[in-house]
Length: 151
Image (cartoon, rainbow, N blue to C red; front, top):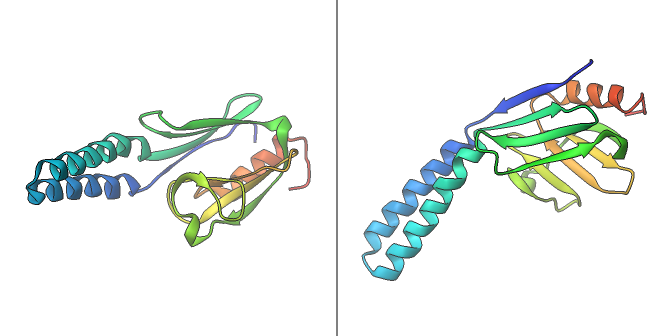
């Protein structure tokens, strides 16, 4: 593989939109001013973040791998291929869930939907779990890009 680009789509954004609507409905039904502001504020925050979680794209960018949620590019990061020690197909824990956060097993999780992932281990000891529905191809690509290091 000379290049890699894969976009995973998932209904996580629909769950977020539904949660925002629920916050607006609760704010309306609470009736008092502080409850209205809190419920509407949380609803607006969730509604603002939801478009950032329509899909997760993992793509080659020359000397690094780009990981970004979208279409609104609020959350993105890159990984230098030179920093990767190894990568392997893995699974996230149910407790790891979705989104961007630190895993209870250590390292970071970037996951949109499902439990399949690529576990990237860095030379400095860090770990990144990239959720994807194309784990085998991503591991193969990383293996080729990191000069055949055993994955």
